[in-house]
Length: 113
Image 1 (cartoon, rainbow, N blue to C red):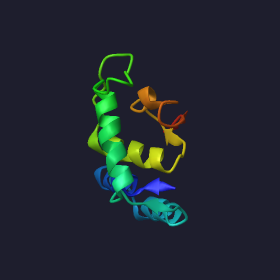
Image 2 (image 1 turned 120 degrees about the vertical axis):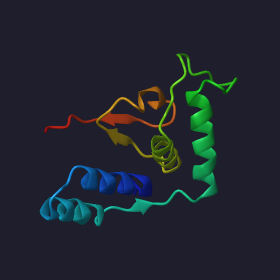
Image 3 (image 1 turned 60 degrees about the vertical axis):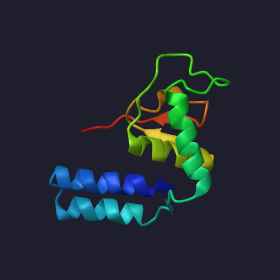
Image 4 (image 1 turned 90 degrees about the vertical axis):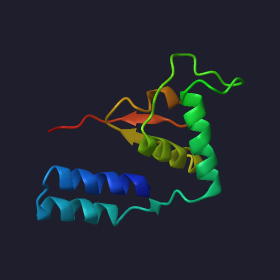
């Protein structure tokens, strides 16, 4: 499964980095094999708000336990979708570390350039 937000991010990455047609088509083909999850559902919207508040340490009954974390809006949508679908989140960065085990399991991958 992949969030529709991630699809947008991948297409933007392709344009910004001048991917060739072959590389772009390979990624599009891979995405065609995945379930693309929309964000328009009330449960996802509610989780977006909750995760944003949690990341800012604004939920009294569930404290973050560290300084506030400013998440990008796209990352919030991806986190909300991951939470609602009870999935694991696969990432190459540290943006979701504070949500690991609290909302979902974070799986880190190493990107080889």
